[in-house]
Length: 66
Image 1 (cartoon, rainbow, N blue to C red):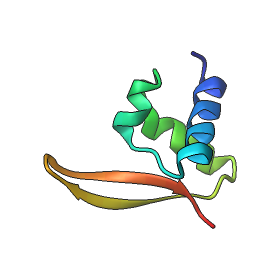
Image 2: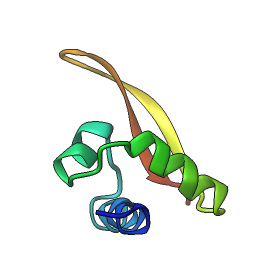
Image 3: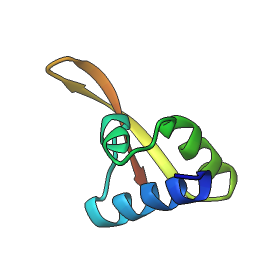
Image 4: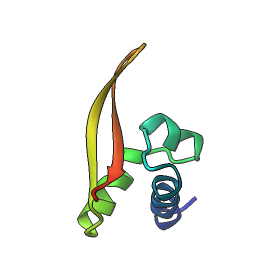
């Protein structure tokens, strides 16, 4: 999957499910989700993140700013 397709997959997932995590992005076949999110931000997409606490530690949840 090329870079643009990965970026599109992330945006589609966020639009459908409201949020995405790195693990969820890996399941979509995106090997460098933080890099793709950084690229989307550079392109002007209003992606925000927040830390969550889970059973296995902390992780970031990404979403679109409303």
